[in-house]
Length: 142
Image (cartoon, one colour):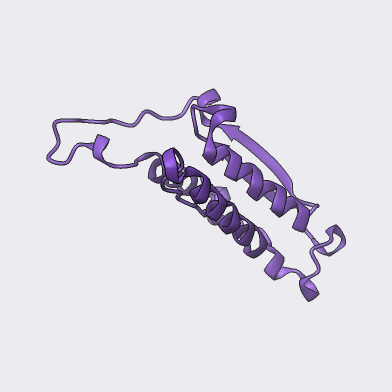
């Protein structure tokens, strides 16, 4: 069995006594795996939202260590795409499901995702504002 799958879940702020998120109350290190999966890099809305989440989370829990993986810099297993299937994969967003599958496969037990629609065009500003608000809430509850 994968040793990572046997590890207990990392503590969240909910696990800390008296809801005190200071580093003195954390008995084991907390690591947050940040995955950058957009080829747009600094122009990416998803990376901008990830930045907002990581900032809010580290403000709330300064003892956290943030590990970063940019999928464009990694050698990941190939995923077969076949356009001749009855419903071709190009009709669906497979990036998030693939990354979530891969994380569970390597033993990460607590995976959270936020999907943002209309991140460009005439609805982009309102969409990104709402997403930043959701990210702030997610960071506080994480």
